[in-house]
Image 1 (tube, rainbow, N blue to C red):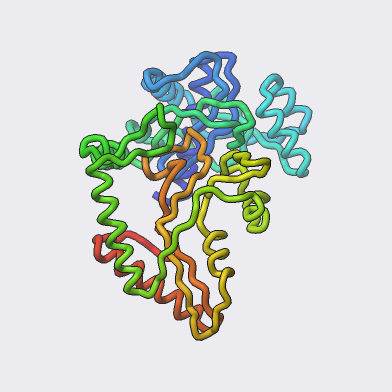
Image 2: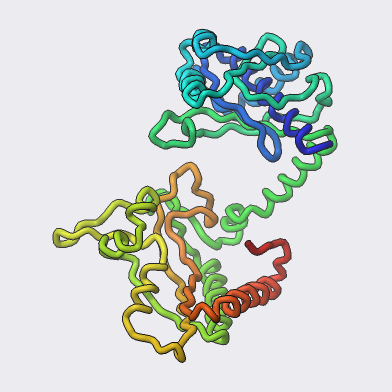
Length: 359
């Protein structure tokens, strides 16, 4: 199936999902429901509560409604008509006002008894969608328009493929991947843990994991020394002046922890190693004969990741970066870039990592 055709089917199923939720949870406010890589979702300010136990009920309602749906009918509305149609839904009202401010066309699409504010891109006919080719998958939380200052909405995800067989193959693949989830293996093999008493996103390395981590660090330490990298250590706590100079406070503040006041001055936990390495480079004058200078560090960093995105060791609030910065003449830039890529390839080959690409 052509990608855009499958995307249109997934978008159409998002409409169907929104319609099903509205029937099952009257008084709810629907917001946005796009297609995504493996299916679709809809964000809803739901009247009541949707849990994983409700997913089968929602899916059954979709299967019931799809029998009454056909093609999608487009209609252009004025701002006033659209606001009247979605009166009481503050999310749709915000979208309508935003579209009108841009001078763009306001359109709705209708299939069955359900109409939604939409730009288009739907299946030619809902009857093209094969039985068993979609599934309501999971429920999560999502802030309106991705802004944590806004209300938390309920996001219901669905999966959709061209055929039932493709959906089943995807579900089997996900089941197998789940068996290899690093969080599951971390617990079974006693590699690391997360403690609520210590805090969310702050991993504790257990003896087995600490041993593996030490081996990895030792491997990289020797590998980088052999490539003429010089190792340094930098503190996890830094005066705010450095981050004002580097621009982190102006551009990265929301991803940093709140300042710590020490003797009337503000300090921050280090979110990255770059400014500190630059200070080391700036500390001494270097002759062109001493360049390139390659600084490396296993640098402990802290970033304020929102609790909704924390994922074991993949997204954490405290982590160690095997980080380096290279200071060189412009004439050496190409050579240094190629050397870095060669180093990456050597490491990936040693660990039999094949599925990667450079940007």
